[in-house]
Length: 272
Length: 351
Image 1 (cartoon, rainbow over the protein chains, first blue to last red):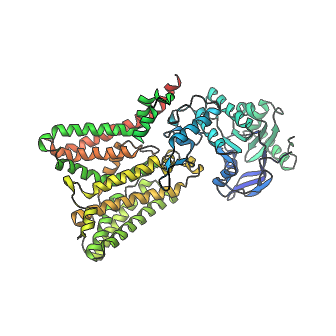
Image 2 (image 1 turned 180 degrees about the horizontal axis):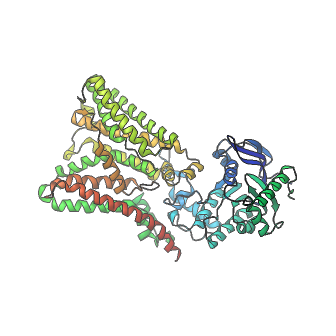
Image 3 (image 1 turned 90 degrees about the vertical axis):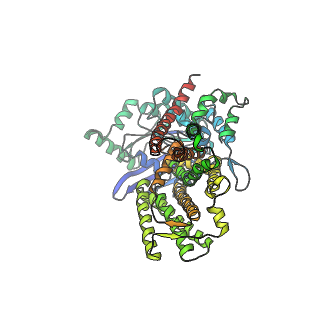
């Protein structure tokens, strides 16, 4: 068994006196989709930011390929292959597809100080990369991204991350703002990324979408992992109930129990 | 980019792009709108001002000269606006540069080059302060530069009185400096016209050809994503503020050398003129989009209206009315452009 691509061990994160994440333990393997489910305010964004190097964990450790890593900024995480794609895909509506694709890593031609952005090369690579992900509607690299659908923008961002050597893809609510058809689009892209051997962390609050692509699920409630299970171990209703935890006292208790369970060293050990 | 990319997209070798060329390509280029606006305004004034020599060398240089002093600053201000920021402290930076030149070289008799170093040094510091305040405090740049506008203007007045006991100062420049910064050349063109063209050319390269242009556009398009993409956004912003202050200083130097004198009067009209030129030039107020050529044409349009009105039988005061209406049309066109850019693709998908 190879070590997980990315692993968090008992990670805590607090901002001053406020604890946001408690004892988070997660791992994701290559070619696997880990779905992080949680309602608003469950600590999902803090978790993403910790994973992608924006925040440093207060306690606990992070490992890549079994070796401890520590990021002092997002750039370091990116260099190690952790790419984060946000809801709107980190795309710039009034820039062309080609320019969007290469923001921060522009291909240039020319010599000496007179380097020129190689528009044709950028467009060609961008269009090809996106088409490889099955988005055949994008044929013109000069097109403005503002004219693409939400799903196409997500695909562009994911294709971009993969092109620049991402090994771990963190998708922050990629389907939240999309219609059914567009969401299906993005889910296909997620599957394609998985097929290519990327480790995907898929953050969502839509159980349906998580069920469609996930291999492994973790439900986050109030900054702690309330449940951790593999595909097929829980029904959609059970997951939805779990996620709704915190709405009533009964659910709150259940969530604390769930947390205690993982906390006491009895996480449902995943089989690999 | 305009000419090259137009010809490239229409090449038969890339058939997928040619069908979308006609309209789609046009909407991506707001400088086309700015250019048409300029031509329209030019034709209007050429017609009504023909009898009064609007088209003569003297008539031409009168608006080109005016355009150049605005244009030197307007393009960097446009860059800032593309990056999602604004700098109105230019209105105080210009007189500050003028006074520092005149006090250093005119009053203290320092060599011209030393005066230049002091002036651009001051501009660098003002730009740096603007940039640092905006990036560190997250206070909107309009407020930050409004504060520095008054601070710099007050400091200019205070220091002028403290050092020279006057608010205006004469300056005699050596011949080479006169010719380089402030003399009338053929057709009555000022030296600043050549600076304007040179700055436009260099900044055209920066925005449209170099990788930095991509960074500026991305910064204005989505700051967070730009940061995530590894762009040093704070450093980029600070550099743009410094660039703008330096451009304002260059404008001040040119004006002082030309008129052989400087006064401390804050140039509020210049602030508005720059913003109008940039917006008429098709730069989005909210950032993320704009072109150097557009700002260039926008500046020319503004200057034609302001100077051209004197060559027509119309009342001079009407020029402000025309500019107001023009500005409104330009902003409406900006909005329409943004919607078009989005809906164009939507209709394309049907094909």
